[in-house]
Each structure stands twice: as C-alpha cells, then as structure tokens.
Image (cartoon, rainbow, N blue to C red; front, top):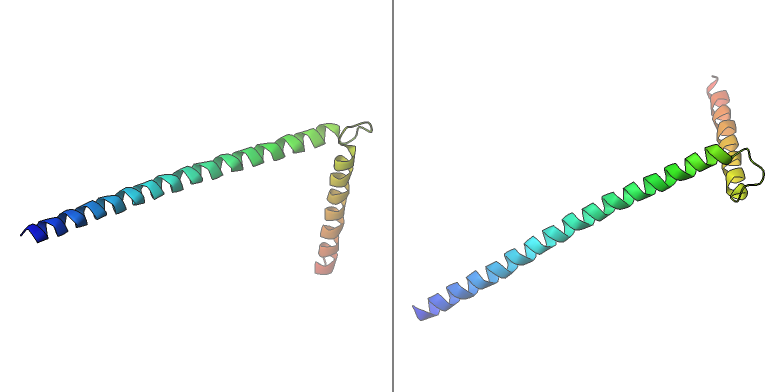
Amino acid sequence: MDFFNKVGETVTEKSKIVADKAKQMAEIASLKGQISTNEDVIKKNYAEIGRLYYEAHKDLVDVEFAEQCNAISEAKSNVRNLENQIKNIKGI
C-alpha cells in the first residue's frame, strides 16, 4: 500500500503543479490582452491628436509639421482622384 500512497501523492503533487502553471498561463494571457487593449487606446488617441492637429494647422504655411501636413493633403487629393477614376470606370 505504501507504494500506491507514494504514487498517489506524486500524481496529486504533479497535478497541482500543472494546475498552478495553467492558472499562471491564463493570468498572463489575460494581462497580455489588457496590454493590447491599452496599446490600441494609445494608438487610437495618438491618431486622433494627429488628425485634430492636421485639421487645425493644414492651411498654415509656417508649421513645424508642414512636410507631414502637405503629405497628408496630397494623399487626400490622390484618394479623391483615384475614387473619381473608379466612378468613371463604373460609369457613375
């Protein structure tokens, strides 16, 4: 019986280790998910700040970010032109 008791104790001990490791992995996954959510919030708000800045300063010549604002304005113009080309192809 002593043998079976030791086997039972070993199995119980190993099961507890596996359960603890699984719990730890679940906690880490949850924390990583929370990190990802917070990073998405940061990116979204940085983008919104940039959009608001662009809208407020796009027409000013002496702007610290003139190069970036001009690139955005040019890209927006290109998008409008490309959308018009698509409409023309579709016959709209």
